[in-house]
Length: 476
View 1 (spheres, rainbow, N blue to C red):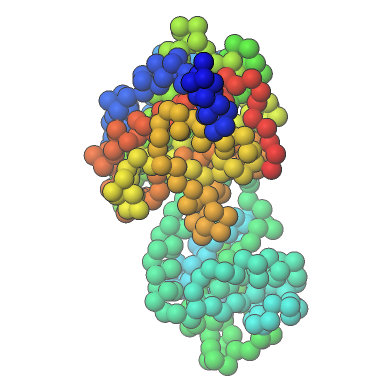
View 2 (view 1 turned 60 degrees about the vertical axis):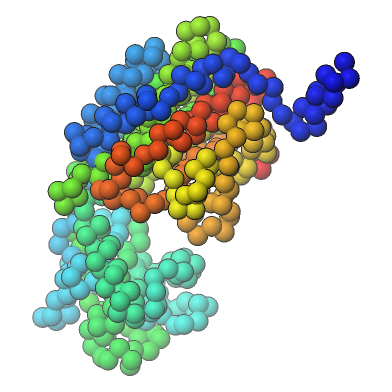
């Protein structure tokens, strides 16, 4: 008796979970072999990089829906597994500046970006800003010129200028190497067709990145002679060609046995960036790995449900589209058409890149970065820690959870659209690697045994969230 009391005391003292043999049994259905089988299909060349709105993305959606159907999950969107919606595809047309008979061409002489409407030729007023942020004068309806050696760090200044009436910004990069790099890196990317949920808005920022020679050309004087408050006028033309593009999130639903109105959502994004310059960007890790993890977790829960061991709360397994275009699929779900009320959504577990090992952990692959687990709910964070200690014993690395982390990963995957609605989240992430967003992100580089352990961690966490007596509390 004393020994039993001692053990019970330890459990209470350390808040450990008693191992759930049922959970362990069904977690074992998640295997490296099954993960590899799914990923070998979704990350194959046949799926053409799964770019949103393309044939490859549609093929992936069908594959995922068929898997959900085979598991017996309910199709929750009016009898369908597809939450269909339209995006606006915008491609750049003619962009140029003119001063008199002289002409500067967009993406050759400067970089232009905006979500504004097509503007055609129109005169714009250009004002050189002061180095003193407090002297925000004469900006009403103007494009404001800021001079910097390197891009970045200007957002607060730009926000103040917008409050003072600025409608556009011309960032003059004085470091020639930095500017050349910007032109070569971002120019081709911005010239590619983009996708968005929102219609174009003429109040949207208009951004130009230029070098010293363009600034001198606009003001018709040597760059060193341009002073704060100097202004000029040039003609700017920016045309866009827009068309609707259909896409879809893929949803499979498992109804809870005791608390069916409370819903846990487990997500990944199944889109990637498609074909670029003739090369297929397969996205095996980003985020083929997360997508097949969701498929395997869904199968584990479905196998349990068939044995009358289904979760007390409902679970929505959702693979979303458009993440690479700006978290569009998850934003559509949360902001436009939440199939289940957000106030009934107890948590979101988001899986985005879990198939690789980064350089920081090359000697110890049993890790996963956790982001956001403590941002909204102390209970969810503590539950996550206890689940790991009880079942998987991975190194939970919180490096990217730091508020001051410059990568800002907390804002860069689909969980964020749930977090902004006060829904507790955990983001599971293996970190970046040299193949991130490259054609070399391929299946032979995936570490499936490590991926299996990570998938089981998410499953066990979901099992606890779905079966605990009370929903996790939001206290932050």
